[in-house]
Amino acid sequence: MFKLNELKSEAKRVIVRFPLVFVSAFAAIGCILYIMKRNGNDFDETLLMTWAFGLYLGIPLHFSAVLSAEAKGLSGNKRLATLLAFVVAHALLITNLIVVQGDLNSFKKVGVFVFYFISCHLLSSFLPFLVGMKREYFWNFNQWMFSRFVLSSVFGFVISSGLGLAFGAIQLLFGETDETFISQIIFLVTSSFHVFFFFAGTPTELNKGNWIVEPPKTFRILVQYILVPLIVLYLSILYIYLAKILFTFDLPKGNVSIWILVFCTLGILTILLAEPFRNMESNWVGKLAKIFYWLMLPLLVMLWIAICTRVLAYGLTESRALVLYLAIWLTFISLYNGFYKKKSLLAFPISLFIIAFLYQWGVPLSAHSISFKSQSSRTEEIMSRDKIDQEELRSQLYYMYYYQSEHTDWFESNQLPVKVRGGLGSYDLVSDLIDSDRFRNKLIQSSSADEKAVESGIKYVNVNLNEIFVQGFNELHFLTFGSKAKISDFTITYKNNGKEIIREFKNEFYSFCKALDRQAANQPAFTYDWFEDGKQFRLVIYEYNYPFAPSSSEGSSVGEGVLLVK
Image (tube, rainbow, N blue to C red; front, top):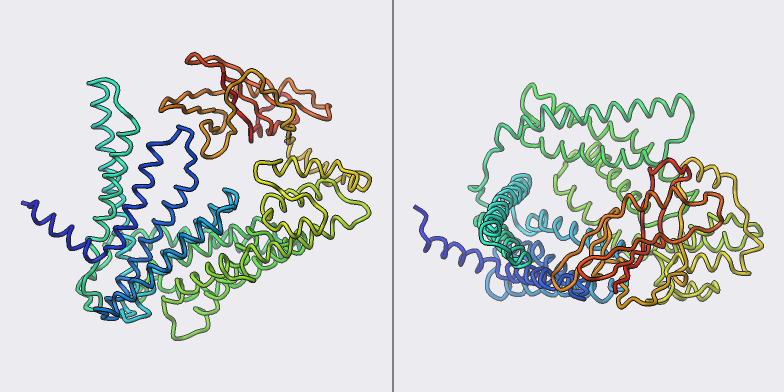
């Protein structure tokens, strides 16, 4: 029978071994709990969410520090110095997220979060092996981390589901309960268990190998009879497409790069998963592993053609830079495993970590730096023309204002208005510029833009904010992250003092779109009024898409708007 004293001693052992991991984890959990408590009460959670994510990054960072110190056999002051070095690195990451990245728009900030997340977890996968841990244990250690994480997640899901059912029964039998408090309890218990369970199973004697277990038979079945056949299927499809290109002499489509990246990544992952049994006799998985990287080379040539075609035509953006960097990584991995005899699995995470580092921090090679240089030059070239394609100029200026607005010197040097926080949005700034004397007489409407618009069947509408009347209403809430009013698809949600009002307006919006005059030069904002809970509400959508065909609703979507409350 499992004793409570054993549980206490085990928890104490794990906390003493990974103290900074638990400090980071529970500080992040505390931030999330506070956000859950204050949500919907005139509270902007953006800064606190940034803190929570920054604190979360300390989990893989400090985990790497402890394992590296143990693998190298450090103790005393040397161990303390190692842990403090990672504390400084963690503090710098948090500072970068809050101070340097603080003014980024939400889309770019999510991208920064993702790359920090990937980089820190990659570091924990290989750093201990660079400082003393036996490299032959690399696959087993990462297989343990992955299996333990999945097991922790499954157990956490069972616990959260069980608690949810229990609290649901209490609510059903005893009446109304505080849903926010219940959500906080479930999140606290589940996340705490996940952290404790994962780190409690961390091997203590890393270099003895007594913690290594053979992969289960079902694992081999999954790889050999499910994943590998799927990889062969994808490979066949892409090679058929490659043959079509060679036969018709057509350039590859731009979106083929995504399929090649996905296939190559899944293929590499499958080959890595097959590592323990790739040398078994009569094992066709091992035979595929030997030639897989050679089979990637023709696909990578097609990938590079697609990338160069797109970049030469439209320049580099951050998303295209991501594809470019991944193509560089895949090319390196393919050539390394194809030609180099003394291969090491460590090359995979280390090279990917370097790529992620260069993409995010490698000034002047970072994605943001090279995309700014490329797109600023392209924008200057477009603005200098005697005849300017209106849609090309609009999309180019919008890109610069939305993704590169922090480069105020460039905007000033090119006599463009600087975007000010709280001022006009990107669409309004671009619309005013398009209508200004500087460009009005130079603009032309290209036939290709007309054909593209007819083919898509969708028209974009952006109404000037000055046309929205707010008289008579007490509250105005923009439908943005952190606001009391939020929109998802065709549903508006308004939160106030813990109370939530949800309203769907899909049918009303479809009827509105059908009634629009398709020949009109300008379209009105969508307005929807209703009364609920003693309040008058007016939803105003000033940014939306509608289909050209009045009988169709496909492609209709809503973007930005405001909710007025009285």
